[in-house]
Every structure is written in structure tokens, then in C-alpha cells.
Length: 214
Length: 214
DNA sequence: CATTCGCTCCTTGGATCCAATATGGAGGTT
DNA sequence: AACCTCCATATTGGATCCAAGGAGCGAATG
Image (cartoon, rainbow over the protein chains, first blue to last red):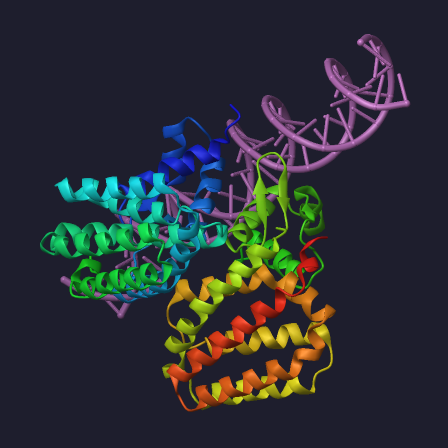
């Protein structure tokens, strides 16, 4: 057992939140998680701190941890941050991407277009974008980008489940344009395309303010 | 004692790092801090997790916590992130700033120009910029900006101590232009001015690659 | 004489127990 | 009947103790 126990707990909770098993507003009781792992509450506490750092949980003294419930305005803000940060990550990444990477991106996009499952789309879309940043050597930047993706995941899910279906062709077109720019190594074009992609998604999301009520 | 003990420890360590008392590469022994506070190691562990979330410490299993030592490339990356994020924070902030705020900014800038102490300058410069974001209602954004400032603080100090003196007039001019744009409520101009301010600082920093060796 | 193996000590990771605080319900009062 | 207060209980925060892993030093050997 060279792996830290708290890390395992953190991994479990992370996938639970990202998969939608734990929803915004849900309370996380330390004892419950601890017993599920046959461990004490201490590693759970550590894990919750780690997740807090990743923006996946929030903590209030003597009240415990919850999955954060974001307002429409906050999600909008996160998307505006992504509009600025992800183009930077992509520009930093492109010079270091090789043919294997672009082939992989093409493959993912292909599967997105053939896929018909909601949950699978969320995974693939995330993988598509994060893979395009894989060449970015700026650790603080990539971890921040990941954090932003994590924090809005539940609302992405809600949106796609609601009305996202009809707009799928737009996403696919944007992804194809992005792929083209990346394959050509055209960072400037890629940045602009990506910024537009995120901005349009943000504006689209704003059309469904009731996603954030529950 | 309604205040969490771990919070006090975190506050102490944070100021210790930001003030330069703890330098990049320094190890932080839990027992040492704990005894200094007459507390057990547990709240120290929690505090270290919090600081890790803020980018002020880093953690390795069974090896303990250290103040992160950034490479020149990483600091450059952080500045590039700031170039993109802080203009957004400023634009978001400006519509909500009132006359009291601009007066306060003017006051800070005035003191910067009269001041001659290195440590005091670091404080004032930080306060100037962070105060200009005070109207920004996007919590994730402001906390991230603060985080970026924190993580480069030791290197800002080293730079100013080394050669920053001679360039002070540039900083002052930039701050004055920024102030003017803010006072006029001209978000577009303010964004552009701020971006240039950060970019020039980044390029200037890159001229001293040996700041990162020790 | 250098190198490597192994041992000891130091530091961190985890479990259990105790203290402090918020939550929810019952009962009394207006 | 509604509201407020107070108490019981559940849940988190902290202290102490024990286990596990890494670093540094010394001795033995090539």
C-alpha cells in the first residue's frame, strides 16, 4: 500500500461528483464515506480538503462539506474565465502536439458524432478539449482549466439533458473547425475558434436560467 | 473560540510566506508549527491543505510540505494567465466601483510614488490592483487572481530588490493611466492598459533568469 | 578509497477517543 | 394555534497514540 488512503477517497468522491451521483447541494457526511472505505474519518477529511482545492466541494465550519450549488451568474463567470484561459492553454499546447495527438482528437470527434448517449457525450467532449491542451507545459494553467471544467460539470449535464440535443450540429461544426486549425498548427486561428466555441456555449446556457434553481 | 484553529494556523503561514519569512524551497515541519501554536499537528495538516489550494504550499506523500519553487517558465506562465484574467476581473469590477473606491486607489498610488521602502511597495502595489477588482462579483475569478498573485510573490520581491528600482517610473505611469480609465468608467481602455501593464512586467521579469536559480 | 548495503531516527499518515457546535423536535407560553 | 425556548442528538473539530515510509549515517566489502 504505497498509495495514500486519502487519495483513494478523493478519487472516489471526485468521480461520484463528476458522474452526477452526487448532485449540487448534496451533503457529504464524513462518517458515511469513512465506513464505506473501512477507514477512519481522518483520510476523508483530507480528501475533502483536496476536493475543495479542486472546486468540487465547499466547506463550512461545524456544518460539513457539500457539493457547491452555483448560481446562473457564477456559471456564466466560469465560462467567461474559460473563454480567456483555454485559448491560452491551447496556444501553448499546439506547438507540442504530434500526429498521434491529432489522430486521437479526430478519433474522439468521430465518436462524438456517432454517439447517442448523453453521459458518454459529456465524457467525450471533456476528453476532446482536455486532450487538445495536453501539450501545454504550464501546470498551474492546466490544473486551473481542469478545475473550471469540474465545477460546471453538473450544469453541463443538466443543459445537455434538457435542450442541448438540437444544437449538437453546431458543436460538431465548431469541433471540426478547431481540429482543422490544430492540425495545421495555426494557433491564432485555433484560439479564435475556441473562444467563439466557449462563448456561444455560455450564451446558449444563459437561455436556460431554470437549470440552476433546484 | 468560534474561529477554527486550523484557520489561525493557515493565516499565520500565509503571511509568513507572503512576507518572505518562508522562502521557496523551505520545508514546513508540522510538529514545529504545531508546538508554536500549542496545538496538535492535526489543524496544521488541515491548514497545509488549505494553503495548497491557494498555491502557497505543495505536498508530497511522506515527504511533507514545502513552499513551491517555481521555474522561470512557470512564473512566465502565471503572468500570462494574469494577462488574460485580470482584465476580465477589472471589467467586471469597474461598473460597481464608486467614488470612494477611486479615491482610495488614488491615495494608494500617491503613497506608492512617495514611498521608498521595498517591502512597503510590494504591499501597496498588491493592494492597488486587488482593490481595483473589489467590485468584481465573480468569486471564483477573484480568488483565482489572488492565488496567482500569491504564487509569484517571492519572485516579485526578488525582482524588485534586484533591478526594479530603475523602472519605477514606468509602473507609476501605467498605474496613472489605469486610474484615469477606471475613474472614467472606461472598461475597454482599462482592460487594454492593464493587459499591457502585466505584459510589460512579465517581459521585464524574463530579463532576470537567475532570480529563479537559488 | 569509493561504493553499497543496512540500520536507526525523524517525519508524516492513520486510528481512536474526547470536546464543541449546529440541527431538529418537544413542550410550554402567549 | 403559532411561536419561542430549551434540550437531546447527530456531526464535525481537535488531541493523543500508534504505524509506516524516507533520509542520513556508518560499517563492511570490492
